[in-house]
Image (cartoon, rainbow, N blue to C red; front, side, top):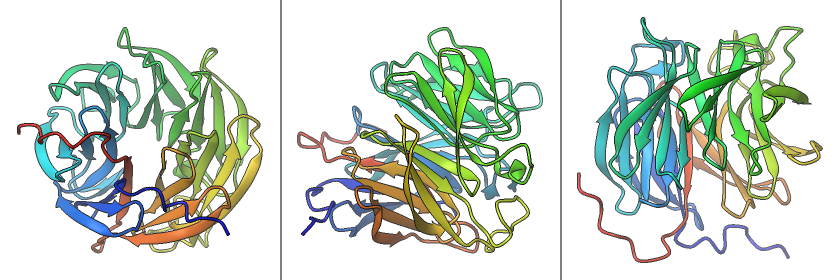
Length: 359
């Protein structure tokens, strides 16, 4: 009889954002028990865990709402101690605004935060020193709304997806400059292969998904030539993309009664879908239903479990990737607006936790 894939995860924690609830909730990864909740500035979006400092970073993009449908930009990034589950610091990036995507280079102790354009400057990426928790640079991406960002495992190249701009921005992180634009019809989530050879990008942006020349799927980008070499087709428009440690490429598909078009209003969604591909062979391995409007995906370090947050249902589905079957469903607090968003898996500390860093 197969064992529960959660059974050996004692001490591991899953952190999950509630966008409208303005909280980060912490769940026991072995039992799904809620361990605690931290209130953060409204309205939180994405999470990133720094295992070196054992800090959890959380972006706050808008005062309420979501991309292109909000009541104003925010400028903060919240830093949370992962073990004590308390806020260490709220960093104000002003005049930068709309922080969303987060990517960590642990070797160089750099955190990259995507920010939106202002009247006199295109969107870009703010560089933060994770030891001092202070911004040390900014890289332009030449697009109005870079939303997701990923770093190659060697820490030298960054990829920013741009919702409305018809390209993915490629930046040299050593020199801090834009080096290429890879043509895609608007883009969402992304992941980079461990060998630095490929980037996997969800495209088109949901608003373009009804176009005949922009079929939904995952564009495979050759990082060396900065060109699209293949497309992994999906039925619905894809927003989140994640690559597991075992080489499985995970895509969260949006579905509604009206099809994969931006005209579908929140609340009209049908269950989303997690579709799994082999990153090596591009073979479609299978799929499983999720909550309404999957928005973020992460996985356990061993690649056995996927976690899919769905913003409309405000749920997180825990899925066994060996059998592609649901394990459990977590529910996050939700007000009238959308709920579950950013996720981070926090492995238990190998040594007794250090005292929290000073505020």
